[in-house]
Amino acid sequence: MSIKLFYQDAYIKTFTSKILKQKQDKDGNWYSVLEETAFYPVGGGQPSDKGFLHNTEVIAVEEIDGEIRHYTSEPISEGETKVEGVIDWKLRFDHMQQHAGQHILSAAFEELFQYKTVSFHLGKEHSTIDLDIGDLSKEDADAAEKLANDIILENRKIETTWMTAEEANRYPLRKELAVSDNVRLVIIPEFDYNGCGGTHPRSTGEVSSITILGWERQRKKIRVTFVCGNRVRKQLHEKQTILSNLTEYLNAPEKEMKNAVERLLEKEKETDKALEEAKEQLLSYEAKELAEVASEQIISKVFKNRPITELQKLARYIVKENDRCVVVLVAENTDKTQLVAARGEAEEVNMRNMMNDVLPLINGKGGGKESFVQGGGEPSISGEELLQEFLKRL
Image 1 (cartoon, rainbow, N blue to C red):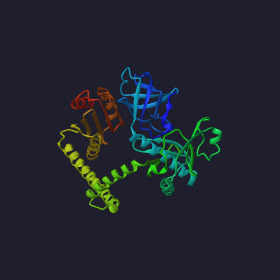
Image 2 (cartoon, rainbow, N blue to C red; image 1 turned 90 degrees about the vertical axis):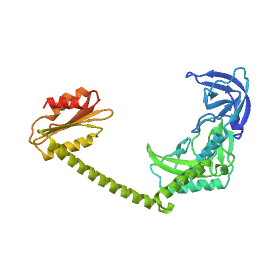
Image 3 (cartoon, rainbow, N blue to C red; image 1 turned 30 degrees about the horizontal axis):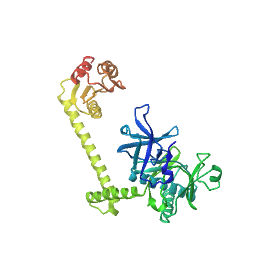
């Protein structure tokens, strides 16, 4: 078992160690096991460290069967018995900020409202905790965020110590211990006592700040999304850039932006409604034109790239105007051929039977009733051929 330097000092950025073995796993991925390591393996909701071993990139670290495997982008040069490890410190410190921030935020929810945290995930952009509650008010979220940031500003120590389970249970633990022996307790004095194997900064002040981004219901729990430390600044910069751009586009100051957007959305609704009415009117005119140029009571046409919803409306307009006609419309679209057929009330032909006869020609599916049917399938034959096959049955 490798010596875990990250537990001795989470601030170790470089180290030298002996390679105990280098192998490929069952999937062919190369990994090395070291005598001692400062690379933190994935676990407890925290991702693994990344960095380099002897100029070879470490892309993941996992603890499997008691050994810490450093997965590398390629095998380390043969003959190397000792390697220098270099931790991606920016990534490591980000993980330390987010993990310590999670402890603080979870403790704040529990201290104020007795809301227990049942799971934690540290993601690339933001982190989440799942609270064992069915609903969360904005007032409660704001209060927990404020208390968490107050604890950060107090710059309390974050202590880690090893002890037995019996010794750990003498503290007011926030959750049950996951191990029964060799417990690593992370302590924020007079605020949080938690068994944890992750990496943390030396004080709450190094977390810098915590911001709750939002929350949602997840399987009878409430999932709270948050960011800490440098991620808060990143979020602020990104959102400020978006707001600045929107201020220019909407020609409104930030405080008036909500009203400006509401006006814009209302105008869009009015425009959409007007467009829909215009489309309906155009379809009505088109239907009348089709009916007028038809020399017989059978009205048929093949269209290119026409949505089936328009074919349906055209067919309904036509049979409404002429109750003694039959309408057959086909659309040749990029990846499928679609067909709509209808008859007026004075006709008795069964459109559904004819549709069932022609759909196998395009390996298609469809449905409807005797007076109105629609269907579609593969473009295995041309639209004109499909139309003629349907007309034969009339």
